[in-house]
Amino acid sequence: MPSSNIQPPPDFGAAIRTDFIQAMVRVDDVLIILLILNRVLSLEDLSALDK
Image (tube, rainbow, N blue to C red; front, side, top):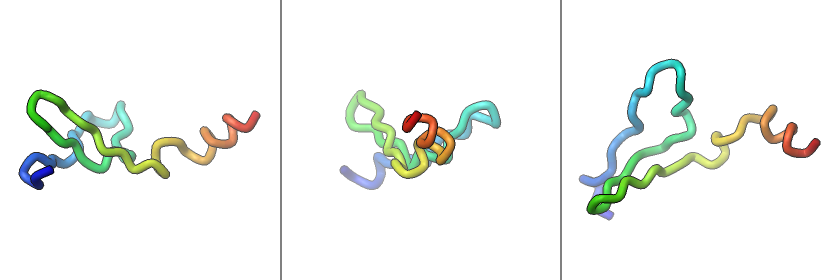
């Protein structure tokens, strides 16, 4: 995909976490969100899944 389609993550304000969004890509009429997988769930979230 062309780098011109890649945009930085939006600033939603303090109420919504965006630290796990690497970038957003527009391909035609589709918006694709690129995630940083090791940041999607915190260590607390991961340990809660084990229980």
